[in-house]
Amino acid sequence: MQNELIQQWTELNKTAMEAIKELGEINTNAMTRLTQRQMEMVSLYMEGSAKQLEALSQAKGVPDLITAQSQLFAELNEKLMENARQTLEVLVGVKTELSSWVEKSVQNATPTSLTSKIPAKK
Image (cartoon, rainbow, N blue to C red):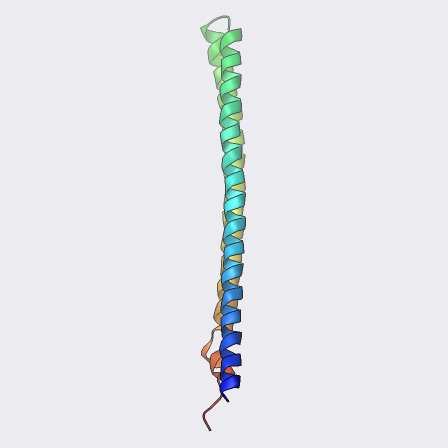
């Protein structure tokens, strides 16, 4: 009887550890994807700054400079909006993964599943 109880506790602990490991993987993947999005954002700003400096050096007057800056701003804005859309997709994907993880964890930890694993006293 004790061996059976120990085996059941071992099984419950194993299930809990698997759930924690899955959560860690979800978090790691989320942070990796969000970091990639952040790095792309930094890259966009660096690229925009370089283009702005180039436009400054090539401008022959204020009207040229204003036109160039307007074009650069529109281009940067479009790229930033795309980055924001992709970031939102990552976050929605993480939400879906976490929801699935919670459902699975709750299913594994329901009172009926726990009581079925613990033997009744004889």
